[in-house]
Length: 161
Image 1 (tube, rainbow, N blue to C red):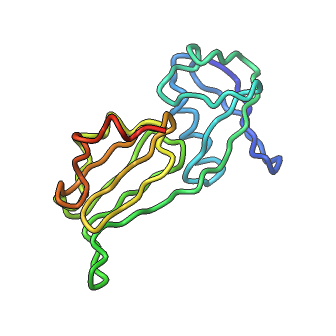
Image 2: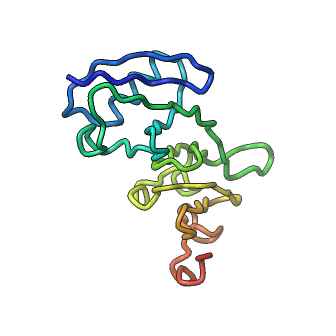
């Protein structure tokens, strides 16, 4: 078992005892519940943002380490705003590795075909029937109705910084 202390910038902190084989994401969930915060990013003392998919050992964490938990603000984008009716929604945290979508599948409510590409999402923009995610590496991922921008395959090589 590892003893890891997680602190918010406000100074509020909590010590967790967790198996070394656990993932960083498991520790993050414990911290989210303890601090009653929905979205956190864990940062090591050397200022590295920790990858939630890594084990604590793979992330280089040792017994007695201190981490900082940064509260992330969730953002929401919506398609289909005609007549105040939304077709689909996309919820994400800037810098996160997941976008949660729901609503009409043909308006971007189903992102399952591109979910594995949605890593390091910086922002999500919506048209009336599709979404575009701008990633940390400058690339763009689109999904939704092709008639509204949901298929960018023909210009993908142009969609970089």
